[in-house]
Image 1 (cartoon, rainbow, N blue to C red):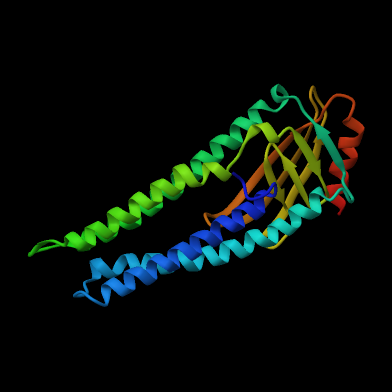
Image 2: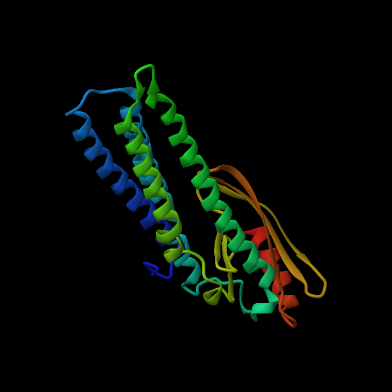
Length: 240
């Protein structure tokens, strides 16, 4: 179940949970390590948990600030366009969003297991295998799988609630994804209206994320009869 209808707030809570959970596990591992002989293979997971806890706090704060922008977007003030779609009209956009979220989970999973795999190299020496250290990595790997495939989907994307568009000069909610281009770490590149059947509003913006700099190309189909409104909206975004 989602924590709220605000996706940015949900992301903030998830990152804060990750930070708190990582810090708690780091404390438990630190207590265990204080009672046994210390090796780098045993200490390495503690370093990973500490780094993850710090990252969770930073990302949680960033998404919390984003949640305030989302609240501003849905407040109903200064909205350029607010349209509803049938599923078939934006099916491709909904499918792309589902693929994006699945890809993000796979990327996160890959990097976590890469880091754990690097740590496993320190669990083998001339004396054999450090079973205790290996059990630490196995536990963290299992915990990661459970969180990504059972925890995150419960708070993830659902096409059933993604049939509406809300568009403002600095942000948009479309196909279940929140976009913001006039905010900390983001900037608008272009906003254009393209005639056609259907017509489209195309918005291009850049932002920084936990995966590095990204450029987003957002294409919003215009419902029939809303072309003039869409043209004014694109101009409003450009001149804001």
